[in-house]
Length: 334
Image 1 (tube, one colour):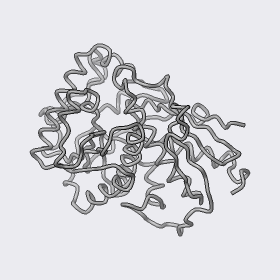
Image 2: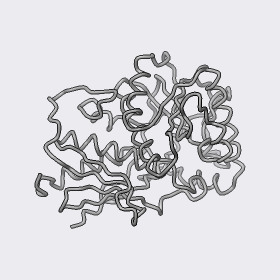
Image 3: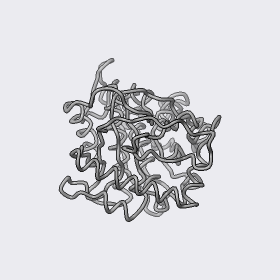
């Protein structure tokens, strides 16, 4: 591929797909740079958008960036190139989290091909990039079937992550640990102030108040509290599903590269779920506290290092959170 093959409009579409990924508190902690000589898009950490209290080690930042990398891979393949990914490609530059080189031609899938599960590319996932967003509302439909759960699991596994749907008893234990972590966060002034700072109506980032969702009137789900002291954002509590379908996303190790792999596995799983009409919401409270993080571990299930909890179900989509303009997140390097 020659460097002139990547025109400005295509580059904008690729980066738009990347920034459609989920990020903690919708902070969108990334920047992108094009190296036109090698036709490589670099993914950099935007450390000024990091959460100093909630995410001091940068685990959630790396997870967010990994999700953006997966979206970028899907979009690159959609436009006909083969995405060649390197994680942490320059050790001397820790802010450079990943690079995606556009090699070509790509796999050349027929128009309309629907590929889910372990196949990372295809019209089904590319379309899902634009439709996926978190839903913090109760799920009201039937439980997610075993066949769909198997495809979601295979998607995460394909990226080097581990995804397990625990038993009902284990789910209840995990949600109890998450609720304890949420109580710790609510009592921590730095973390609670940091969370409230990202409730932003009319902005290109953060979470608009309409997307926060209600609290669970039954106490089954530890919905993150962004609203302490801000009664205007509080919605009346409602009952959530009696038996939530929870998945545990983990990795065998716990390095920066593993966090990036987990982010790719998370987004692959979320896009497969979206392609099947399944909604999802994310729970990271337990991962953010060392004591709770340790308690989330279940070596019997293979999730030695838990990176994220995901709730899946059928129900209302809820409003999407906004995204920053591409012009705010890209440096073409030209």
